[in-house]
Length: 117
Image 1 (spheres, rainbow, N blue to C red):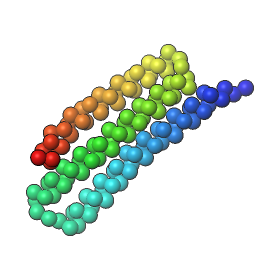
Image 2: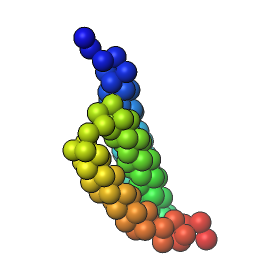
Image 3: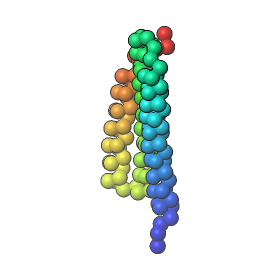
């Protein structure tokens, strides 16, 4: 007999992970479209530099949001399979994604402060 709550939680975690991927892909798509548009309609060097920095910040925010949603998917998956091995894997994944998010945000912060001044 299939244990339905675990199957449902696994399916929910897969859906959440796919949403995270869609968030990141959507961010890349929007950034590329805006970059192509701005390259076709070139303006001054300083305006283009500021636009590229703004695009980096926006893309970085999509990546950060996607990473946070992936962490949620991993937490739901660990609820579906609550073994020590799963919890250790979850801890490692959350640690890696948190460190990636921290350094990505730290890298983007000075650029974001510069753009809004």
